[in-house]
Length: 431
Length: 92
Image (cartoon, rainbow over all chains, first blue to last red):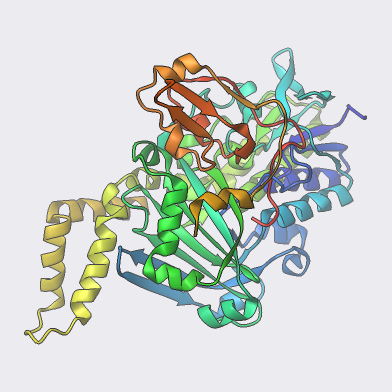
């Protein structure tokens, strides 16, 4: 097996495959190392791929080529309590035309496709290979060691090995331990349902898709739920903050089960046949969680760099991963031109990231992860919203109260005016 | 949905060697054991009678939850499975 390359990418997910693709297209001899049998085999996510301008720059007809399930035309947020729910939905005509605003996808298919494009461009895919260390010389990274396989050499390595990134840890770029307050775990059930049933049930035609997020359905554990339509299946799952889940004595799968049995949700998933159950961590600490992005001979991209924007309103990751992979690739191309793979030589990556939306967005939303560590959001507010809507529409023969009276009565009892003002201020500041 | 069945819908290529190994002493002295209920794969079980934590690597979803949740650093080994082994998602 060939062991010398001009660049090594660890991890063939969206960040790694994009980096490999950009570098291979520029003529570099790139190894794309993946621990799965094929790229995407180990990867799961909620299910919505937001529009990725970074990939549209590479594939102008992205939506014609990529293996996509449906494009999202409808986005909803639902507040849930034990017995009631309140939803808001936006459906936009512009989301129904290219360039589409987002898609549902299956990672084992999408990631395999993207890595396949990197291979077509000339990258060497080395699958079934778990990287367990970096090789260093004079303090700089000059390769990686693969479990049971030996060493691969290159003057520069891109660590795109996912949320726990042992590659970045071994290179001394991320801290030795993670803070559970900065991590979330997602669990998901993929339920088969005929396309016609999905179209009828959610008001969709052609390849139109629906993405809905839920708050209030996690039995007090900080987190939320989602339901996304694939072509002929539903992705349904929950996400929990680890610091909250750890002390809750509740299990992710019992909470998933309870969610699927909530009366309003049960109607949406009725008839769905379980296909697959999956789980994964999400780096939700935002800007403050980002490790050193650049070391001598090494760059960090994607989840490995904690590039995830989870503000509650935005839930983005893959688009940031792809952009960071592309920029890391460009920095490596520049380093090959100058022959300088030191931290200074690779600092282009940091600069490109600062100029891109990736770090700008994460910096702007820096306070959001702290704002979201507020138990009231996951219990009291959904109950307030659903209760208020019930009050407004309930007809019981008595005289009507004004909306303000109804709201204040509920809010005083449930939240307290002081908390309400504080939470509104913290949300306004964070978002 | 029968919760016990959901674990049967995920595919694995099981290695003989576990990729995660615990120091039973550390788990026995732990006051939290958040791993037991946090693990989405239900891989951790605590036996009160034997005062022993068991980790079964067969059903590990490789999500990383235990790595983050364990505040006692109970792992004498925590790595991903060897190439080609472990969880194999099809349509997630």
